Length: 392
Image 1 (spheres, rainbow, N blue to C red):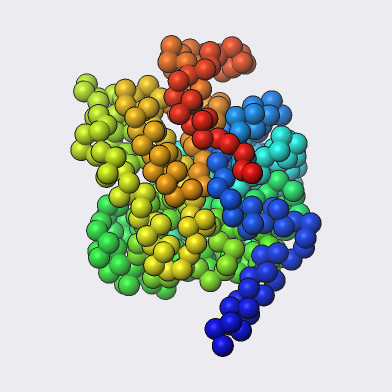
Image 2: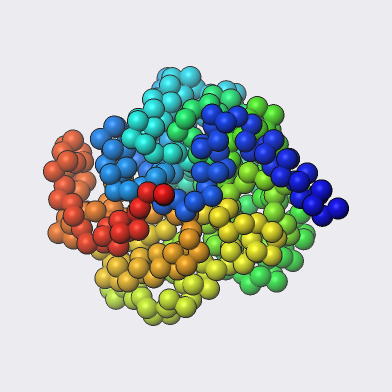
């Protein structure tokens, strides 16, 4: 009986995840081997030289957002048109995105599409007041609009050879002002979710709705889902079970301790140090959390992804921190993407830059269209690049 059940599960998995031999390499099997890459959060669509340079590092994939790009036709939001009321994809923007994917494919990179905004959840840096837009977690009509957006996008991109996954939304925060502190203990998170289950703050339910909608038009492309509270590694702890779809990748981001790794720390008279309040053991305990959750709920470890990690390049302890994070991920043979690769609107986590390159020089050269003159070869990138090896 167990053998028959296992065979039935395998047949179902293959039917959902491997519908055609031609796309097999682009589907869930791509993630059977550890994949290492970088994040592309640029303000403009990257050119061919950009993708060629990332590929030359040994990266096999790129997590790409289009949400910072300038929309066509006077629209408010790229591709979505208007996150206040989604009515359909902007076709000129779609053409721009598709051409960008073509360039990544030419460079030999797989792409995970990762919008910063969805209907009812405009990226905070693009809102009028700079605050988190929580309408998606307050009004179910935005769930429906988000599902329609993803159906439209999946229909357009499902056959593109570069696509390796759809990352449904970057760093969701359904817990925002909903009674759960960001760093609550596990029991508190579980109790909170028990009260919120079935409401508009139910992140797993939101994902189920969107994934079901996508599967009506695309049965094969893997879906990547970020945990809650800005993709905190511990936020899967309150999920009572894995999602139903077998082609799901579960992603977390690693910037903890954020007070030390982030930009505000650089403005302190005496910046927080690492090791300090946190050490490698504390970092490991944090990264362990999603893998422990996965083991408890029958999710293979190779379906967990460290979608972002990093620290300010001019922080005195960034090298030590990066080495610790990566060595811990090495222990899991983890998929990961460092943040970020040659971002054109911010230098804070561009580890290739020489330590002598100051922010003022970066912004001046970028504004003058002379970014190619930036001095690279920074020692921080050596920590990452020695692990950026193409999968065998």
